Image 1 (cartoon, rainbow, N blue to C red):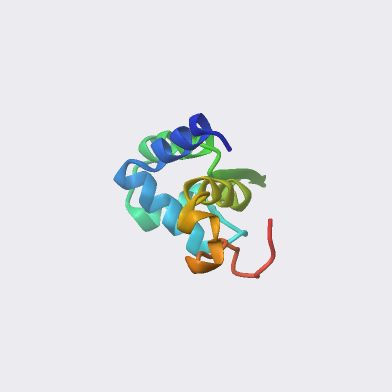
Image 2 (cartoon, rainbow, N blue to C red; image 1 turned 90 degrees about the vertical axis):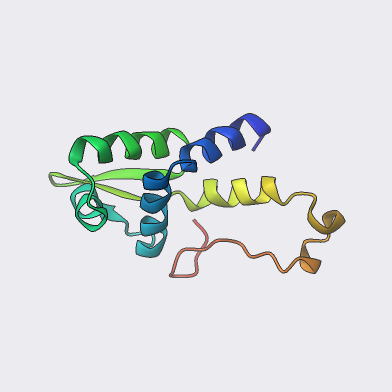
Length: 112
């Protein structure tokens, strides 16, 4: 990840509703949630939700898949880890073990 990619990803998170959506989806794990479920849980109107999901997808932070008539959104763990790695690249003078940093993993513990 380069600085331009990091700015795009961070910009996608730099709004309250988008941060709430992202955090909800991280809690839901790799299976994700349908757009309707996200809207219901966070009290967001469909048009507003669609706008925020689009922004998070453009930032590379979410994946989208179709399941019948539903669009399912989930965190893009690979991109999230790349962002965290970029942000902490020089932490503790390069000795990541001194920082107690963790890799973000889905609830099943596997890397994605």
